[in-house]
Length: 120
Image (cartoon, rainbow, N blue to C red; front, side):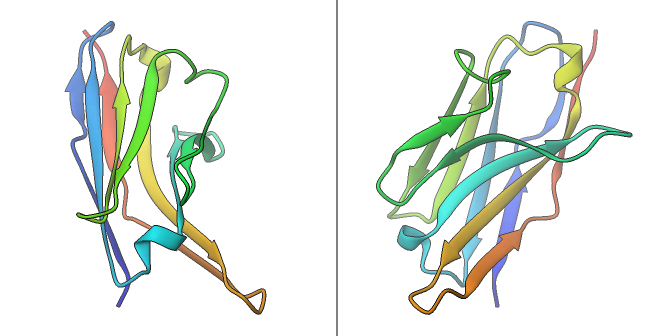
């Protein structure tokens, strides 16, 4: 059974920092591209950052320079460090894992999400 369990969300003041964690189980973690998405009320879900199996990273424009995604292959975890948080960063943050298998079948999984609220 595949599980992606997020943690680390909460209330933070503008300008503050937060580190989100995602623990994966039931997948071949080293093969999956791991990503963080977010969804604010009334908005579509959007990608924040992703890290591939070889460690290459991609960031959304709004996340560049103030976010860092990393993964621990030994612990099957991925984290997202976010700095200089703004009110518009308020959203539910979701962990995602994705792998296209050798026969083209897509393995795509989501966590339940963790709320991040940026407010004074």
